[in-house]
Image 1 (tube, rainbow, N blue to C red):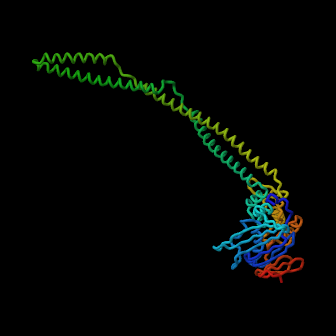
Image 2: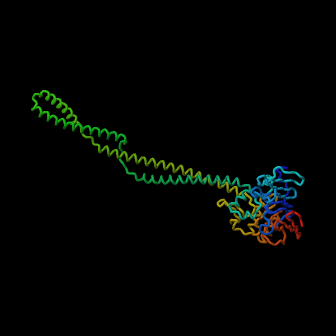
Length: 450
């Protein structure tokens, strides 16, 4: 028989439990009622948790398994759960370093030993076999537990990741769109207030003209200065002419040369005039204003295009986000929750019962929900555990018993009690008293019935 044959098993509860050297329980053997509440009672630190913990460590996997459950002074411990058709054996042995090594085995009554016991238990046991612990979970933990039991955890995680990614993308685009729109509005206001300027030549051409005019003016000014200098020199030479008759010929030649030079330069000066640079400077200012205005208009056009593109992206992001959310809603519309009126709220990521958080449910409703979750998936090993049974009143225990009997379940309930009288299993200092229909069996620390 393989793990995939788990569906062929009949419903099973614990027919008998044998525990050896597990925490406070040195040796015990109990045969509980097949269905309904199995009360495990006793004083604090008497061993109630050890008895129930031995079953949870075997049935519910690693997270319920103590690191070192072996009773002090012993080399190993064992818990054997007889479920009628199969026996499940969990054993711990100390290694050379003193640590506990766990082994798990499942055997049929015919002696067949299953090859993959842990995987088989995963198929046979409820994902949440402790309804009391489920009720005490946070809303988020409850939601995750139920979704995992319904097989929706991975799919919802994937969908929620898609929703989160789409939301973040939309938020990023919206932020960029707001920034672009603010720039767009600012540029639009500046564009509408730009002053009107007359049309002139390009600023580069005007700049060249201004440079050439300045050079011409500078040259004319230098020529004027030079002309004045030559004129002074002529007068000096003419004065010297009277004194230097001996050098007259030489001076006359020099004077003639200077006169010729003067004549040429005077002719050039007479034919030249100053260029009006004021107009060129004015035109350059106009061209500069035109360039600045055009730059603002270009920025405005870019901002307008950017806003349009981001608006399109934002619309697409909104559609993607809504599509992701619609997929999640469709997923949950197809889910058959174990309790009528139960649903999963996507915003708070919590379970609701009749549109109210589970924390606001009555104790009876909470018990029904916890039991329904433990029964979710119709497990073949129909056992649940309630560790804080002392918090339940008689009516609550009766309701749990009724639900378990109706659905062929067995509920092991831990209760603090100093009175050994009553139906159930009473533990005191490692000794177990089993009381069934008025009969009591005392099992001492050596495992012998009295």
